[in-house]
Amino acid sequence: MNQTFDIIIIGSGAGGGTMAWALAGSGARVLLIERGDFVPQEAENWDPEAVWKYLRYQTPERWLDDKGREFRPYTHYNVGGNTKFWGSVLYRLRREDFQAIQHVDGISPEWPIDYDTLAPYYERAEQLYQVRGELGNDPTEPPRGPYPYPAVPHSGGMIEIVSRLRELGLHPSALPLGLLRPGDPDGCILCNTCNSFACRIHAKSEAEVCAVRPALRSPNVTLWTNVCAKRLVANGAGTRVTGVEVERNGVTSIVEAPIVIVSCGAVNSAALLLRSATTGHPNGLANSSGLVGRRYMAHLATMMQGFHPLKKNSTVFQKTVAINDFYLRGPSSPYPLGQVQSQGRTHGVMAQTVVPWIPLWAYDAWVDRGVDWLAMSEDLPDDNNRVTIARDGRIQLLYRPNNLRAHHELVKETKRILRQLGFWLVVAHSHGSRNTTHQCGTVVFGSDPRHSVLDSFCRAHDVENLFVVDASFFPSSAAVNPGLTISAQALRVAEHIISNDLKHL
Ligand SMILES: Cc1cc2nc3c(=O)[nH]c(=O)nc-3n(C[C@H](O)[C@H](O)[C@H](O)COP(=O)(O)OP(=O)(O)OC[C@H]3O[C@@H](n4cnc5c(N)ncnc54)[C@H](O)[C@@H]3O)c2cc1C
Ligand code: SF4
Image 1 (cartoon, helix red, strand yellow):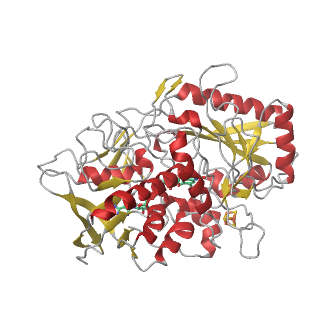
Image 2: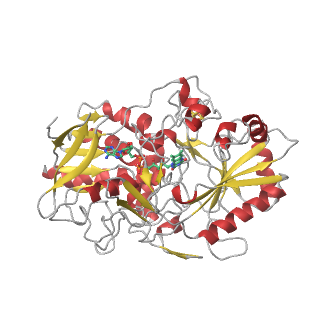
Image 3: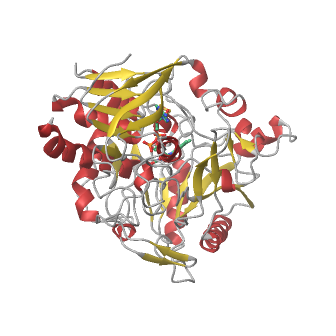
């Protein structure tokens, strides 16, 4: 397997998959390394029991928490990464998210680029991932042109909820969604097993379908599956990566390229850099700032369900509504609270994972009468929230959620609204400090090498031929879903590599 390419990309998710697509036409010989395999198209894709009870697609790997206790992270190692299982809510960050914002518990820092810099790449990412949305109703929408496709219409039940929300003085808007050809014979069927499930018919806009498979049509793109990058090999000074040590079926080898792009997801990218320590750079590669692994963020997320015992919820595809009224300030506070989204339908098996002793029939009856929501707030960068490598080589995640006052206020306000909508009871659940779905911030980008690991094109300040293009680069987590921003920045970095680095090869 000892081979040489022009560019190696490690990880095929939102960052790496998009990057492979963007570099496919460049003429460079691109190797995409993915530790997992393709997710098979099979009945279990849409089976709540297979997905939620038997965790069929989740990595069996165990990480350690801050107290050294093992847990199984909610993350997926396969072609397309976590995008295979995402809800495909594809938001641009708000213009304000790129600026420093005072939150109730601290400051969300400025990004080294502004919204206008990323806007053209957002547009391209929305084309690539076929985003559907509607202009005009979201009070926080940054300036932009029309969406590539019209919004997915609300179901009957959600139309009623949207009009009640408007009567309450709120501004509900359509969630921007990446769904392929809904209504067409081979398109999305708007089913009730989308978020957290793989799409059995490949009708979800995710990295495997929209980016990796199209990239592989180019003869210069090669994909290695079931190959794990163990460490990056660098010159003595740690200023240039010379190769990637990879392992397949227990066999280790080195693959080389003059440009290496790490896109393993925020936790694994930091872990890879930390594991690449040598005596020349004992704190890990690209880590003169000491920030690799630090400033882990993951959003504060609470799943909520409004329940009405006499009203069956007939909606199948429920995930179409957003409430952004509290994104920049709360109803009674000047600080940002976050976003509320309607969620995909909960299944009894999913709810049972929270309190397993309640019988499934009771859960099924409950979820039949519930409408699901997600309240999501920004958590703030804190150097003490970090990814480290434990003595036995495993990943340890030290994360203490912050900005909780803002989140509690958002949850309280959402409960109040749901009760005003007529729900008799509202229940809430959060994964707390083991939340990894929106992981970001561990290899932060910025203009000052003392306070960031990457420059604004995601090139390591310390290592001239190393890029990290996944959720790691986020200096703040904002409070909308991260995927479109990761993909947009990947397109921007790819363009930069093509015009600056490839011509020197
Ligand atoms: C259930 C769920 C729902 C979500 N819903 C949404 C949503 O609606 N909208 C949204 O924007 N975001 C959503 N997210 C978050 C979104 O999926 C992630 O933010 C996004 O996928 C992160 O992209 P990434 O490139 O950083 O990492 P990933 O997409 O996780 O990709 C990392 C890839 O690297 C591979 N890898 C890791 N380590 C190595 C190694 N050492 N060697 C080789 N390969 C390696 C992994 O196998 C993986 O394929 C959701 C996530 C989950 C889990
Ligand atoms: S058919 Fe549509 S709604 Fe169902 S999983 Fe696929 S993309 Fe999601």
